[in-house]
Each structure stands twice: as C-alpha cells, then as structure tokens.
Image 1: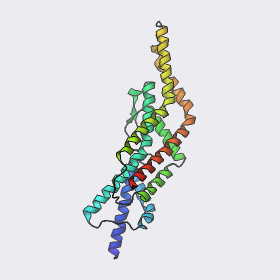
Image 2 (image 1 turned 60 degrees about the horizontal axis):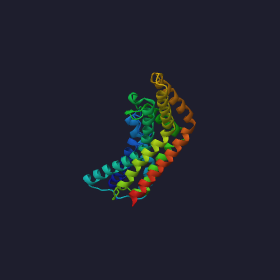
Image 3 (image 1 turned 90 degrees about the vertical axis):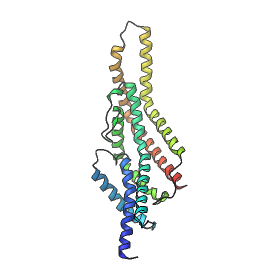
Image 4 (image 1 turned 45 degrees about the vertical axis):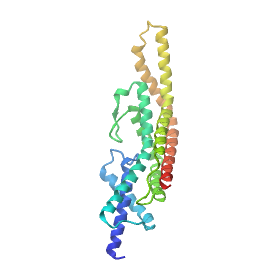
Length: 259
C-alpha cells in the first residue's frame, strides 16, 4: 500500500469513527446539553475518536474507496450514533415524565419553564430532577460509563453494519418501560398529593360552609415541596437504578443489532 493510500485509509477510518461519536453526543445526557457549545461537542467527539482509533484500526475494517459508497457509510455511522444516543436519552425522558406528573398534581402544569439542559419547554419539577440527576452523574463519574458503553458498541456493531437495529418490539417495550419508570418515580409525591385531594374533597362535602378551595392550592404546593424535600435523600438511589436500567437497555440494543 502506497503512502497516499495509507493516509487516505486512515483519514477515512477516523471520519467514520468521528461520525458515530458525534451522533451519540448530540442526544446523550450530559454531553448533549444545550449549554455546551457546538465547538466543545465536536472537540469532545474528536478527542474520543482519537483515543478509540487504535482499537478500531487494529481490526483492519473494510472502507469503501468510491466517494458515494463512502458517504453512505458516513451517514450510516451517524445514524448508529443517533440510535445509541436516543436509547441513552431515555434516562432524561423518565425524569421529565416523572416531573410532568408531579407538576400536574401540584398545579404547576401552566408554569412550564425552558429546560436549560436541552433548551425545550419542560415541567418545573422535571427541570429540578434533571439538573439534580446530572450533578449526581457527574459527581459519581457515571459519564465514564456512557463513554465505555459507546466504545463497547464496536464489539457488537462494526463499522458499516450490514444488518438493521433491533426489531420494532424492542422500541415498543422501551417506551413502555419509560412510562412505567416515570410513574414509579413520581408515585410517592403524586400519590400523596392525590390522597390529599381526596381528603379535601371529602372535607368540602362534609362541611360545605368552609371555603376550603381558597386555601387548598397554596397548602397543596407547600405540601408538595415538603414531600420533595423528604424524597431527596432517596433520589440518588433512584437515579442509580435508572442509570443501571438504562445501561441494560443499551446492551439489549447491541445484542439485538448483532443478531
């Protein structure tokens, strides 16, 4: 192999590796935050691609020489990274779903704010839980496991994979699990507020002379914040369970893609 062909092969391989990492970083939690500048995201993807490059090049993957087939492989690698990033992103979806349920019960539905992490409208409690979970993931170095999971993808999904991702049933079950986990995470606060609503309703029916609804809303908000404060010590364990579950989903994606 001539020097020119060797340089072309190495540069083509690096661009393919960069494409997959860029797709993942665009959607994954922590890395894909809106507050992170695009240049920083690209630099992070490039740095990780440089680190992973010797591992991938040792396998001598086959790379198309023609331009159009190579562009098709680049697009395919970006899509692979986006699919992996989407599965990792479900961790964020669970937290936002739980926050939406809590906001609905506390009366904050009309007070949705802009999520500083992703720049979209999201519930206030979802913002609180997402920011707290992000800090916990960074403090415990859990983002290193996200990088390790992405590196592991090359063992299951080679460059230019010939097969499709996991079948449709995997994504159906994934959405089902996201809804179930969001309900479980919100249920302590949501259930307690629901029971308080039932109690207020019974009280208003028993003593209709009391204008209970004039004071129930601020009391309900205070009660909700007290419940959230009491649940904070257990939030780290919940995030740990969500993160481990999320990593198991990524592994299921890899195994289904390999078959």
